[in-house]
Amino acid sequence: MQAIHLKKVIFFLFFFVTIPQLSRCLDNTASLKNADSLYKIQNYGAAERIFERELTKLEHPSHIIFLKLAKINEQKGDYLRTLYYLNKSFETSPDDKILSKLYTIAQDHQLKGYELNDFNFLILVYKTYSGFLVALMLLIGLYVFVVLIGKKYRNEYIPSSQKVILGIYLIGVWTLLNLPDKYHQGIINADHVILRKSPSAGAPVEYVINKGHRLNIIGGSDIWKRVFWEDQLLYVKQTDLWQVE
Image (tube, rainbow, N blue to C red; front, side, top):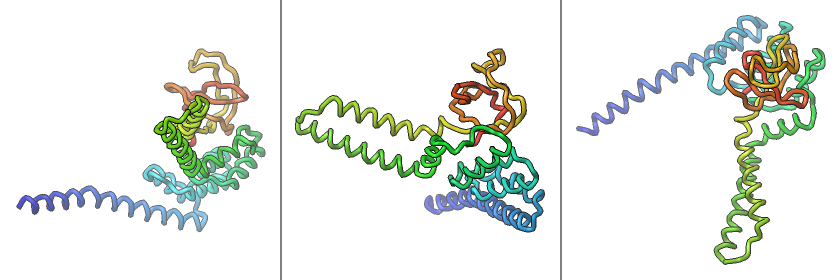
Protein backbone atom coordinates (compact mmCIF):
# COMPACT_ATOMS: atom_id res chain seq x y z
CA MET A 1 0.00 0.00 0.00
CA GLN A 2 2.80 2.38 0.92
CA ALA A 3 4.59 1.49 -2.32
CA ILE A 4 1.50 2.51 -4.33
CA HIS A 5 1.31 5.87 -2.54
CA LEU A 6 5.02 6.42 -3.16
CA LYS A 7 4.58 5.76 -6.86
CA LYS A 8 1.72 8.27 -6.97
CA VAL A 9 3.87 10.89 -5.26
CA ILE A 10 6.73 10.29 -7.71
CA PHE A 11 4.31 10.50 -10.64
CA PHE A 12 2.83 13.80 -9.50
CA LEU A 13 6.30 15.25 -8.83
CA PHE A 14 7.39 14.22 -12.30
CA PHE A 15 4.23 15.68 -13.85
CA PHE A 16 4.34 19.05 -12.07
CA VAL A 17 8.13 19.56 -12.36
CA THR A 18 9.13 17.96 -15.66
CA ILE A 19 6.11 18.73 -17.85
CA PRO A 20 6.26 22.54 -17.38
CA GLN A 21 9.99 22.51 -18.14
CA LEU A 22 9.37 20.45 -21.27
CA SER A 23 6.61 22.85 -22.30
CA ARG A 24 8.92 25.87 -21.89
CA CYS A 25 11.62 24.11 -23.89
CA LEU A 26 9.17 23.42 -26.75
CA ASP A 27 7.96 27.04 -26.63
CA ASN A 28 11.57 28.29 -26.86
CA THR A 29 12.27 25.96 -29.79
CA ALA A 30 9.18 27.19 -31.63
CA SER A 31 10.08 30.84 -31.01
CA LEU A 32 13.64 30.32 -32.24
CA LYS A 33 12.39 28.57 -35.39
CA ASN A 34 10.09 31.53 -35.99
CA ALA A 35 13.01 33.92 -35.50
CA ASP A 36 15.14 31.88 -37.91
CA SER A 37 12.39 32.07 -40.53
CA LEU A 38 12.14 35.83 -40.12
CA TYR A 39 15.93 36.12 -40.32
CA LYS A 40 16.03 34.16 -43.59
CA ILE A 41 13.54 36.51 -45.24
CA GLN A 42 15.56 39.46 -43.88
CA ASN A 43 12.83 40.66 -41.52
CA TYR A 44 15.65 41.57 -39.15
CA GLY A 45 13.70 43.78 -36.77
CA ALA A 46 11.18 41.08 -35.84
CA ALA A 47 13.87 38.38 -35.72
CA GLU A 48 16.04 40.50 -33.43
CA ARG A 49 13.21 41.06 -30.95
CA ILE A 50 12.53 37.33 -30.70
CA PHE A 51 16.21 36.36 -30.44
CA GLU A 52 16.82 38.89 -27.67
CA ARG A 53 13.70 37.79 -25.80
CA GLU A 54 14.72 34.13 -25.99
CA LEU A 55 18.27 34.90 -24.81
CA THR A 56 16.86 35.90 -21.43
CA LYS A 57 15.29 32.43 -21.12
CA LEU A 58 18.11 30.22 -22.37
CA GLU A 59 20.69 28.97 -19.91
CA HIS A 60 23.22 28.05 -22.60
CA PRO A 61 22.47 29.99 -25.81
CA SER A 62 23.98 28.79 -29.07
CA HIS A 63 26.78 30.88 -30.55
CA ILE A 64 24.74 30.90 -33.77
CA ILE A 65 22.15 33.17 -32.13
CA PHE A 66 24.87 35.64 -31.19
CA LEU A 67 26.28 35.54 -34.72
CA LYS A 68 22.87 36.27 -36.21
CA LEU A 69 22.33 39.17 -33.82
CA ALA A 70 25.77 40.48 -34.75
CA LYS A 71 24.84 40.28 -38.45
CA ILE A 72 21.52 42.06 -37.80
CA ASN A 73 23.21 44.91 -35.96
CA GLU A 74 25.91 45.16 -38.61
CA GLN A 75 23.15 45.59 -41.19
CA LYS A 76 21.69 48.39 -39.03
CA GLY A 77 25.09 50.08 -38.75
CA ASP A 78 25.25 49.57 -34.96
CA TYR A 79 28.91 48.65 -34.60
CA LEU A 80 28.76 48.68 -30.79
CA ARG A 81 26.19 45.89 -30.54
CA THR A 82 27.87 44.09 -33.42
CA LEU A 83 31.09 43.98 -31.40
CA TYR A 84 29.20 42.88 -28.30
CA TYR A 85 27.45 39.95 -29.96
CA LEU A 86 30.60 38.87 -31.80
CA ASN A 87 32.37 38.79 -28.44
CA LYS A 88 29.52 36.75 -26.95
CA SER A 89 29.74 34.30 -29.83
CA PHE A 90 33.50 34.01 -29.38
CA GLU A 91 33.08 33.33 -25.65
CA THR A 92 30.58 30.57 -26.44
CA SER A 93 32.51 29.04 -29.33
CA PRO A 94 36.05 30.43 -29.85
CA ASP A 95 36.96 31.00 -33.50
CA ASP A 96 39.90 32.88 -35.01
CA LYS A 97 37.60 34.15 -37.78
CA ILE A 98 35.59 36.05 -35.19
CA LEU A 99 38.81 37.55 -33.82
CA SER A 100 39.68 38.74 -37.32
CA LYS A 101 36.20 40.24 -37.77
CA LEU A 102 36.45 42.02 -34.41
CA TYR A 103 39.84 43.40 -35.39
CA THR A 104 38.53 44.68 -38.73
CA ILE A 105 35.60 46.52 -37.13
CA ALA A 106 37.89 47.93 -34.44
CA GLN A 107 40.31 49.22 -37.09
CA ASP A 108 37.47 50.91 -38.96
CA HIS A 109 36.41 52.77 -35.80
CA GLN A 110 39.89 53.25 -34.31
CA LEU A 111 39.17 51.17 -31.24
CA LYS A 112 41.64 49.57 -28.87
CA GLY A 113 41.61 46.19 -27.17
CA TYR A 114 41.04 44.00 -30.23
CA GLU A 115 44.62 43.65 -31.43
CA LEU A 116 45.62 40.25 -32.79
CA ASN A 117 48.58 40.01 -30.42
CA ASP A 118 50.19 37.13 -28.52
CA PHE A 119 47.93 37.70 -25.52
CA ASN A 120 44.74 37.36 -27.56
CA PHE A 121 46.20 34.29 -29.24
CA LEU A 122 46.87 32.70 -25.84
CA ILE A 123 43.31 33.53 -24.76
CA LEU A 124 42.01 31.87 -27.94
CA VAL A 125 44.09 28.74 -27.27
CA TYR A 126 42.99 28.66 -23.64
CA LYS A 127 39.29 29.05 -24.42
CA THR A 128 39.47 26.43 -27.17
CA TYR A 129 41.50 23.80 -25.34
CA SER A 130 41.06 24.72 -21.66
CA GLY A 131 39.35 21.44 -20.75
CA PHE A 132 42.06 19.37 -22.41
CA LEU A 133 44.91 21.48 -20.98
CA VAL A 134 43.58 21.32 -17.41
CA ALA A 135 42.96 17.56 -17.66
CA LEU A 136 46.48 17.01 -19.03
CA MET A 137 48.08 19.13 -16.31
CA LEU A 138 46.08 17.35 -13.59
CA LEU A 139 47.14 13.99 -14.99
CA ILE A 140 50.80 15.01 -15.02
CA GLY A 141 50.52 16.44 -11.50
CA LEU A 142 48.86 13.23 -10.27
CA TYR A 143 51.62 11.13 -11.84
CA VAL A 144 54.36 13.21 -10.18
CA PHE A 145 52.48 13.09 -6.86
CA VAL A 146 52.23 9.27 -7.03
CA VAL A 147 55.95 9.02 -7.84
CA LEU A 148 56.82 11.16 -4.82
CA ILE A 149 54.51 9.13 -2.57
CA GLY A 150 56.21 5.97 -3.85
CA LYS A 151 59.62 7.38 -2.97
CA LYS A 152 58.32 8.37 0.45
CA TYR A 153 56.96 4.85 1.01
CA ARG A 154 60.32 3.30 0.00
CA ASN A 155 62.18 5.80 2.22
CA GLU A 156 64.02 7.21 -0.77
CA TYR A 157 65.47 10.70 -0.65
CA ILE A 158 63.22 13.39 -2.16
CA PRO A 159 65.01 16.66 -3.00
CA SER A 160 63.27 19.77 -1.69
CA SER A 161 63.43 21.25 -5.19
CA GLN A 162 61.06 18.54 -6.49
CA LYS A 163 58.53 19.34 -3.76
CA VAL A 164 58.75 23.05 -4.56
CA ILE A 165 58.31 22.41 -8.29
CA LEU A 166 55.25 20.23 -7.60
CA GLY A 167 53.79 22.95 -5.39
CA ILE A 168 54.31 25.61 -8.06
CA TYR A 169 52.84 23.28 -10.67
CA LEU A 170 49.69 22.68 -8.62
CA ILE A 171 49.33 26.43 -8.07
CA GLY A 172 49.48 26.84 -11.85
CA VAL A 173 46.71 24.26 -12.29
CA TRP A 174 44.62 26.01 -9.63
CA THR A 175 45.13 29.32 -11.47
CA LEU A 176 43.93 27.79 -14.75
CA LEU A 177 40.85 26.36 -13.05
CA ASN A 178 39.95 29.72 -11.50
CA LEU A 179 40.93 31.96 -14.42
CA PRO A 180 37.42 32.07 -15.97
CA ASP A 181 36.02 33.45 -12.68
CA LYS A 182 38.65 36.19 -12.43
CA TYR A 183 39.20 37.25 -16.02
CA HIS A 184 36.56 38.75 -18.30
CA GLN A 185 36.37 41.26 -21.10
CA GLY A 186 34.11 44.26 -21.32
CA ILE A 187 33.09 46.76 -23.98
CA ILE A 188 32.62 50.43 -23.13
CA ASN A 189 28.96 51.20 -23.91
CA ALA A 190 28.90 55.02 -23.85
CA ASP A 191 31.01 58.04 -24.75
CA HIS A 192 33.12 60.04 -22.31
CA VAL A 193 33.52 57.16 -19.84
CA ILE A 194 35.95 57.91 -17.02
CA LEU A 195 38.67 55.50 -15.90
CA ARG A 196 39.83 56.29 -12.36
CA LYS A 197 42.86 55.47 -10.27
CA SER A 198 40.79 53.86 -7.49
CA PRO A 199 37.17 52.67 -6.99
CA SER A 200 35.72 56.01 -5.93
CA ALA A 201 33.84 58.82 -7.66
CA GLY A 202 36.33 61.23 -6.11
CA ALA A 203 39.42 59.37 -7.33
CA PRO A 204 41.76 61.04 -9.85
CA VAL A 205 40.77 60.69 -13.50
CA GLU A 206 43.36 58.81 -15.57
CA TYR A 207 41.57 58.49 -18.93
CA VAL A 208 38.31 59.44 -20.62
CA ILE A 209 37.42 57.01 -23.41
CA ASN A 210 34.52 56.54 -25.82
CA LYS A 211 32.27 53.60 -26.62
CA GLY A 212 33.51 50.47 -28.35
CA HIS A 213 36.90 50.06 -26.71
CA ARG A 214 37.43 46.62 -25.18
CA LEU A 215 39.10 46.23 -21.80
CA ASN A 216 40.31 43.27 -19.78
CA ILE A 217 38.37 43.02 -16.50
CA ILE A 218 40.24 41.64 -13.51
CA GLY A 219 37.86 41.57 -10.56
CA GLY A 220 36.45 44.67 -8.90
CA SER A 221 34.42 45.80 -5.94
CA ASP A 222 30.82 46.97 -5.46
CA ILE A 223 29.79 49.09 -8.46
CA TRP A 224 33.35 49.27 -9.81
CA LYS A 225 35.24 46.99 -12.18
CA ARG A 226 39.02 46.76 -12.11
CA VAL A 227 40.27 46.98 -15.70
CA PHE A 228 43.61 46.84 -17.47
CA TRP A 229 44.08 49.78 -19.83
CA GLU A 230 47.26 51.32 -21.26
CA ASP A 231 49.39 49.08 -19.02
CA GLN A 232 47.59 50.28 -15.88
CA LEU A 233 45.08 48.80 -13.46
CA LEU A 234 42.21 51.29 -13.29
CA TYR A 235 38.55 51.37 -12.28
CA VAL A 236 35.36 51.99 -14.22
CA LYS A 237 31.71 51.93 -13.18
CA GLN A 238 30.16 48.60 -14.12
CA THR A 239 27.21 50.41 -15.73
CA ASP A 240 29.60 51.95 -18.26
CA LEU A 241 30.56 48.67 -19.87
CA TRP A 242 28.98 45.47 -21.11
CA GLN A 243 30.74 42.52 -19.59
CA VAL A 244 31.28 39.54 -21.86
CA GLU A 245 30.98 36.38 -19.75
